Image (cartoon, rainbow, N blue to C red):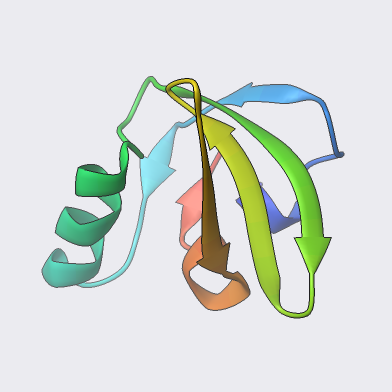
Length: 69
């Protein structure tokens, strides 16, 4: 399921990252890698705030839909 469908506060493992190569590379630099753990903190105004690698990161819902857990 896409990251945007995760329940808040529930950790999940990243299974796949879709999208174009440049999008996948950008997300990888932010810490979104296959096998990594991610937790959705909140969804505010079209942005998804997640906790990944002990850091909080905000990404747009369009990008969050490309991350599957």
